[in-house]
Amino acid sequence: MTSQEPQQASRSRARSLDAHLSRYAARTAGMTASEIRALFSVASRPEVVSLAGGMPNLSALPMESLAGEVARLVADEGQVAFQYGSAQGVPELREQITEVMALEGISAHPDDVVVTVGSQMALDTVTRIFCDPGDVVLAEAPSYVGALGSFTAYQAEVVHVAMDEAGLIPEALRAALDSVQAAGRRVKFLYTIPNFHNPAGVTLAVSRRAEVLDICARHGVLVIEDNPYGLLGFDDQIYPALRSMDAENVVYLGSFSKTFASGLRVGWALAPHAVREKLVLASESATLCPPTFNQFLVSRYLSTHDWKGQVKKYREVYRERRDAMLSALEQHLPDGCTWTRPDGGFYVWLTVPEGIDTKAMLPRAITQRVAYVSGTAFHANGFGSRQMRLSFCYPTPERIQEGVRRLGGVLQDELELLATFGSVPQRPRLGADSPGPDTA
Ligand SMILES: Cc1ncc(COP(=O)(O)O)c(C=O)c1O
Image (cartoon, rainbow, N blue to C red; front, top):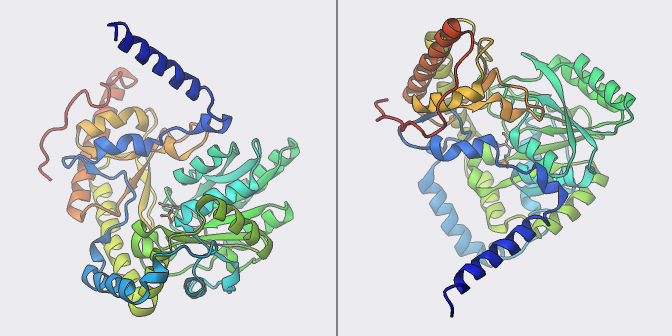
């Protein structure tokens, strides 16, 4: 081998890699790491209080008794549970899912339930079967980052619809539909998170629900109701699902991620019969079948454990953390900040005074050992730079208090810079300053 050969080989490898990259399908152009993912490695350092991630808090799960359940499942039903299963999902579980949804007033047949790999996969599949490139999807402003990722992956265009403290604003929905349709564009569906919204922390008022459905039905637009947090209302309230009021025009997405265990990746879609058939075909081509073992485990858990009692425990865990966050915000945030007051779920949506850009401020916040997600991550159009999402689900109440105290300090500094310079000067790049030791 000559001394030139290794260099030539590495140049040729680089050339063929470049050629592969240039062959990506057009739909990959919008696939970029979400701001949340990009943040993960820094925000997960132990000294940083992360109010960024939305990881469920599993501290209240009965691990010993679940270990027994797993062992019994392997011993009693291993031959079936370790095998491929039906693309639509295990029939007994689908039956139980209809009982879970009955708590929200939904009356459904197990035949119309499709079990999916988390509700994220249901979202992906629904988008895959409905959206051609250039189709319009309506979504609240702000909206769930994972849904925006799916819409982008199928080259759908997201048009945002305004919300207020009572959720999606019907007049804004009507105006958005009229203007998109007047422009000759096709709206394929409205994607909405009616309960304990991620990231906004608000709930669609019951008095608005029928109106939202009516507007969509009049415009011939399907509603995708994404409801992973519906049973996590802190005052034990359960809101009637949109699907309970309209079985024809709503595809309902549910999940065991927040009420049981997110790592099992068991979610579902409940769809009108004709849509359900296409969903099953699309999901079969993606995964053959959802994980049989996990479905059996969820099914056993629902029939042998006090799962409603467990959901109640989760509600208590999250309520305590919500309270810690709201009181810390009251105590530590400077004047001019406003925030939502969620009565369930995982998130508070914070608006900061004009002149502060939450995306630009993030490196400085991390330097001060607190992380959040900038509001821009939850918009498809670059909006949200005066907002941020704060998650209270995972850290202890003490850590939440400390994190908010640090955030208050960062915001106070920004305001002082604004008062002195009229704008906030350029800040160091993320990672330029290492976080100091944690004392929280
Ligand atoms: C609004 C919303 N929809 C869907 C999902 C995805 O959940 P799953 O774990 O069921 O895929 C999440 C997860 O955070 C969410 O917040």
